[in-house]
Length: 132
Image (cartoon, rainbow, N blue to C red; front, side, top):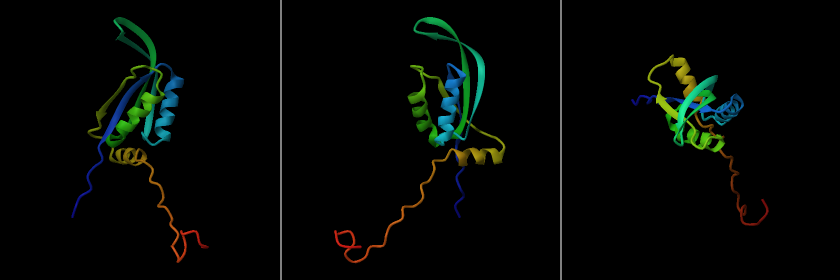
């Protein structure tokens, strides 16, 4: 008997220049099932080097929880929507957690399965320009 392989989960740390931008990113990621949930932490003060200068900025941190197999799609979507030229997107493995929560993350960040396509039974003459 085969045992079900556990789903690998990640937390993804990102930053955005404003809470409104972070909220749009969070809604897109959760709405598109790229993340089960996203936490926003506003008012973060960041200091970083950019193009040879030390910069300071207020940012909003996003922490998303998702399946490891969804990371590439999540990253691509953030890069598409993000105003920064080089957005901060880093991920770490979720090693442990409340089992029910981890199961929820795995289920809610799984791609939606489309219902099976219904096919009509073919009858003699159907599909060849004849009458149905």
